[in-house]
Structures are given as C-alpha cells and as structure tokens.
Length: 235
Image 1 (cartoon, rainbow, N blue to C red):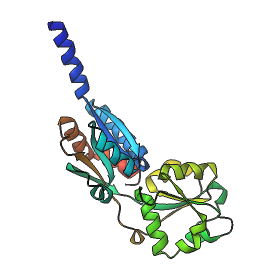
Image 2: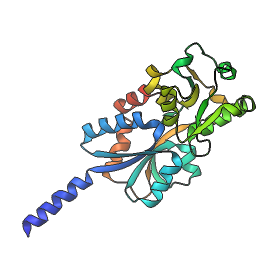
Image 3: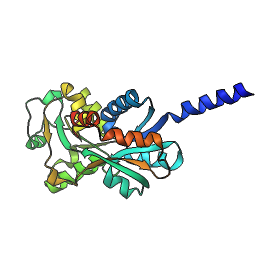
Image 4: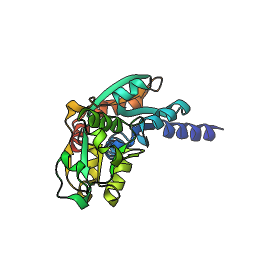
C-alpha cells in the first residue's frame, strides 16, 4: 500500500509541473519560443493551444485546463474573459506584404494595380488583425476600390500560407508572422498605427487558475530573456 501511495504522489507531482497556455495563432512562433525557454529554465512543461480569439474563448468556456491566455487586451475584454493577473508583452503591428511574384511593388498604392488580383486578410470579426485591416481599409478610403479583390481567411497564418504559395498577390498579417516567413515573400509595408485601433498584447492568468506554475510564467515574462524573444518577434 505504501508503494501505491508513493507512486500516486510521484504521478501527481509530475502532473503539477505543467501548465496549459492558449494563444492567438498569429503569435505561435513567439509563444513557442517563450515556452521552450521557460521550460528549460523552470522544468515546467507548457502545453500550447492556438487558434483565433473566438476559438480560444470557446475552448476556455468548456475546458478547465487552460490557465494562461496570450492575446489582444481589447479582444479579451470584449469576450469578457475573467482573469486575475496580467503581464503586458508589447504592441502588435499590422503589415501589408506582397507575394514573391510581385517583388517590384513596394507601396500601398500598388494594391490598385491590375496585377494585384487577390488580397488576403484574416477574419474581420474573429481576429485581431482582420479587424485592424478592415479599419485601415475604411480609414484610408481604400475599401470600396479594393473590395472585389479581398479574400477573407480564418487567421493571419492562413493568409501567410497562401502568400507563400503565390495564391494571393498581397495580404494583411501581423508583423510577428511576417518575420517568420519574410524569406519566402516580397516586400513588407508597416501600416500607420493611427489608422487602426492599438493592439496591446498581454498574457493573463484566468480567474481561479493562479498557482505556483502560472506565477513562475508571469515572472519569466518580465525577464531580459523573455523581452529579447518578444523583441525578436516584433513585439
């Protein structure tokens, strides 16, 4: 019986040394690198879940495992996701990128060219950067001129995939995703931040999920190592 208790105690301790973290898919590269660095430092496994903000909010409702959530603060508030702790990671940036087939185009006006037939953007209702792209297109008075060229996708990474394959001529994605694919596509233009709502990226500990593991992760995010990783990925 003593052996059984020892085995059970060992199993529980293993289970305690892990956390579940959900994040917007546009930050997968940055979050994955942060998680790996944290795991190596603290010996706490980070189980990562990715999707658009709407998908993640649904998972949070029906799963009791997710403890940490990384995403846009405005979306988190609008989805009424309750949390007990928050760490600011940086500001997200909307960028316009062209496919490799259009290396000669380097300005926003190029979107009106006949050669640009398909422009991708993430879901304008369910994603941070889809919403930002929609705001930009309307504020810059480009929407009506370009609306027949616009193609809506589930997420920024999906737009990136079609840009790499050449099935899109141009697309709106986040700078973090661009930095991961820049060798496979054409030129990038950073969109004026005055033309869309500021995108503040945060990590929150969900209400009732705070423990020693989440405390360690939040503390890690303030470290020089974490800030270096975030800067590398455009945050």
